[in-house]
Image (cartoon, rainbow, N blue to C red; front, side):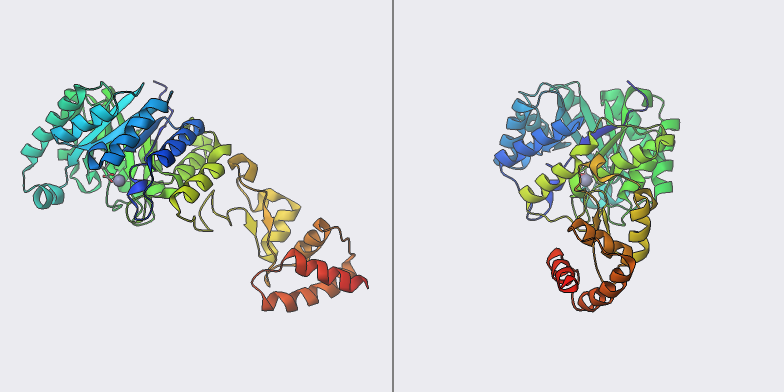
Length: 384
Ligand code: KIV
Ligand code: ZN
């Protein structure tokens, strides 16, 4: 295993699809799975087979069409769930069963009315059942973010001994601070004797807006898989956004971490997922939002027009986005106005721009954004 590659585990079709209103049919799921494979995702979590006949069918169909990526099915630490996952994945070239149980005291007491020892036994048993179907088994310690580290380390050691090849450390409630999450991963790396036999995985939710930061801290501290979704979709405030973690690693080569993702496909797949799931992307979303490469204030526009790197750390073509936009609002300046006139075929000298700028401001104060048609009318009126 290349020690600096971070495996990308996409859960758009499982955690992402749990979002109300985002439900997909099998054909839609297959289309997205093929796009994820083309994007370079290493593992596709295709669904939760026991949850419904439709989800079982989707996992099964995705298993038939995916050639290179690992196809994964979720289960609880329950025998019939694991059997369903094993069945749904039977046509997969590279199947993975993802099984697990809550390990925080809150989950142990309130969800399971159980004890730490009993949960540990159930965890081990679940991994053994899953190993009957595939040697690629991932265990999740649900709510690991709020699980005491010493107990978590015992669980991780035991499930690796039982045959888990990946161990997922979910911050299920999005509670951890980046430093805390990173320390948790470091603790496991330093205190689980057989940790080298498995890959540690980050699965961070975004309840405090920290999912990307936490996943990156996890990878810095030794995790080598990140679980994420396109556009950050997922339960409540969502999961770690795939496009964000990938671009953080590309923008910061000093971390020494990389992925197999083709960045130029990030915007096309974002649009595909947004359209298919009927879930608009917020305009200010990093990397894939409509405003991610738009400049509207005079100071920024002036700098950008002199040298794009003054206000852009990523080139839009690198992530498959449309070219950068100079948006004209009442906060825009003369250089942006002259640039937009030039794009429409009007070249004006400095004096003309001074006059036109006053007319432009009068229009801009009335409208949110000044469009090409407004500029065209202004330019023609000036030339008369
Ligand atoms: O957030 C979580 O803990 C999960 C698990 C089922 C992996 O989604
Ligand atoms: Zn989750």
